[in-house]
Each structure stands twice: as structure tokens, then as C-alpha cells.
Length: 498
Image 1 (cartoon, one colour):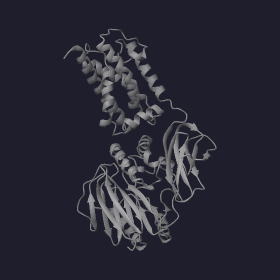
Image 2 (spheres, rainbow, N blue to C red):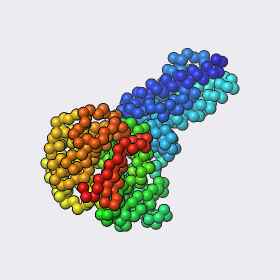
Image 3 (cartoon, rainbow, N blue to C red):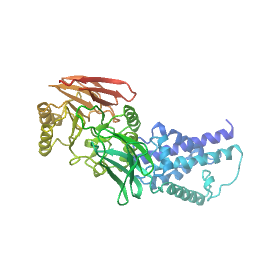
């Protein structure tokens, strides 16, 4: 191995080790367990070429200096700052898990250093690196003053990268609480701005709603819409998409997706979202545990970034899970009916009822009284109930499941609920009990659980990441469970004369 090749290999090794160690620290601090997935490998490789000082130094010295140059990023980068500029937003689309500012900023910073380092090695340059030369920053000076100046320059560059443009979209747009004549459009911007939504029944829009004052979190309601109509819209002259208003007719068709427990693996979560987008649902139901910790703003940033292609075209209706922890972030993000903890809505031929049934508590008397009223008032041909902790499952049984079964199952049977959607037990399972179909659909990204002794009435069970696609048309319901590879793991049908 010649000297030049050895220099590059040594740089690569030192940079790789330093980036791994720094980002392990960052992931530990921010509780981001996906920070070292394979999708960031390219960042580490580029960083290895861009760091270091040559073959004359020992690997330990290179590693120490590379750690020093990365330390300010770990220490100073704001946890809440995620891809804050348009350029970084584009980069994160290429590298799904490179979403934290330290990693995304390092991509931009090291690309320049890659070319400088390659030139210095292959051209045989022996030029001493100035302490204040940003382009030559990857070749650190040997004095403590040079190291200090380089660290300050790196921090300055990182700060500049973190300065957002005024109208940069940090989240969204995403759709909430659609009815036959209205919908809410929600999004967040990096700095306060006056939100603007253009919309219309054609891609040329034609109508516009503008907020009255500047805000960071924007919620704009579009009203006076036509039932069962496709509308096109654009937010802040940036992102355009379309959606369909709810039909009025009880005989209308309906297609919706059900998913749950998306909280842990962002790579799998992203694959599931891509499959749902391909299915083009009218709306999306989530049975809880959207994120690992509802109090962690960083995790919500990741959730909305992954879900963005789906939520801008399909209204999103979540149920509270245990991992949401009743955090204020949950209620700030979503615009849902009733008290947002439990609510009901109609969409064409179906009524949907969402309950708060977490792994911390079972329904209160107030919620059960409300549920009975909603069930009794139903006039839709199809009736769906969804919540987080299942009443039936092949994953063993605990006291909470028994209590839930005693409280909820008699109501579902009395009022003819067609399907109950549940999560929590990370797998897929379909169970039939006394004419009611119970579906555990908890494969959106969390670690899968092993199936145990089959529950009486269990029809199909699968340990797989998946989502459920439900279609209602011509008086019948068809359910299809699809895994992250697009394969069908279960299919069932319910007739109208059930």
C-alpha cells in the first residue's frame, strides 16, 4: 500500500470511528435509537475522507482531533432543530434517518473537505493550513490555537446552517377532521408567518384563505366545500396536494387504512407509509403509539416527516396510546372532534368511534356513557370502533385486557359493531367473537412480539410489520392486511346482510 492510499485509509478509519462515537453520544442524549442505521453510512464515509491530517500522525491522534471537531455539534446543536433549511430538507429526503442537525450539517461541511483533502494527497501538497481558512479546515493545524479557531469556525458554519428561512415548512401540510363540506389544513413553519392556503376543484385552485396574524403553528379551515369532491390545494406557495371531501350518501364507497404502533423503527415506518400512499386511501386511522415518547418533540418531528407524503393527501385520525403519555404535543398537533381523547365522526357509509384505552388505564365512566350514546345514535350502515389496548389477543392475558373485555365487548355486541381495530400487541391478528370482528393491527414499526397460544376465535395471526386496507362498496366490506413488502398476509370479507 503506497503512502497516499494509506493516508486516505487512515483518514477514513479515523473519521468513521469519530463519527460513530459522536453520534452514539448524540443518539443517547436525544433518545434517538435509529441514528446509526445503514442509511447514514455514506455520511461516515465522506467524513472519513474529509477529516484527518495525513499518514505521519498516528490513528489515535487523528481520532482525537476528529472527535474534537465533532464535539461542538453534539454539545451545541438544538435537539428540536430538524432539517431547518430548504437545502437540508432536500438532503433528508435522500437520507431518511439523517434527520438530526448534527448529521445533516456534517454532510454539507464534509463534501467540501473531501475535495480539498483529495487534492492535498494526490497533488502532493505540503501547504500549511491556515487557522482561519474554512476551505482548508479539514487539515487541522497542529497548534492549540489552530484547533480552537477551527472549532469556532465549525460552530459558526453549523449555526449558519441552522438559520431557517422565514417560510420554511418544518411540518406538513397535513389534513385533519374532514367532513362533507370542510377540512382543516395544518402545518408548522420555522419562524412566525401569515399562513396562506389556495384551493379549488382544479389544479389551478382559484380560492384562497389567509390567516389574520403570524404564527408558527398554522391551522386553517376550508369551508363551503362540495361533498364527495376532489380538491386541490397549496400551502404558502410551496407544497401542492389534493384530497376528497366526505360523501353524504350512505351508499358511497369508502377506502381507508388502519395502522398502529409506528413508534420505533423509522425505516420500517417509512416503508409502511409508502405502501399506504400507493393504496390511495380516503382517510387513515391510527390505533395509537405514534411515537416512543409523546413528550419528545424530536420524535414528533420524525413522525411527521415520515408521514408527510400520506398526511397531505389523506385526513388522519389517531387514537391515544400509552406512549403518547397524554403529552401536550399530541393535542397541539391534531385537530380532532369532541375532546380529542375520544371522539366520533361519520364518513359516507360508516361511523368511526375512537376511544382512549391506553396501557395505563381503562375507559372512565364518562367515556363509557358517551360511547353508549354514540353507538345508540348510529345510522350508518357500517360501524367501526378503534382504540389501543386489545380486548382479545393471542399474546397472553392480563388484568387490563380482562377489564376491557367486560366493559367494551357487551356494548360492541349489543349495538352491532362491525369491526373493532386495536393495537399494542405488535403483530397482526383477526379474531371473530359473537359476530364481531376484532383486528389487532400493530405492525407499523415497533418491534414485533411472538405469538403465543391462539385466542379462541382467532382466524389469522401473523408476526409481521403491516397495515390494514379496508374497502366498503356495493354493500360489502373487504379487508386486506399488507406487509411492508406489499405481500398480502390476510384477506376477509363481511357481507351487507351480516
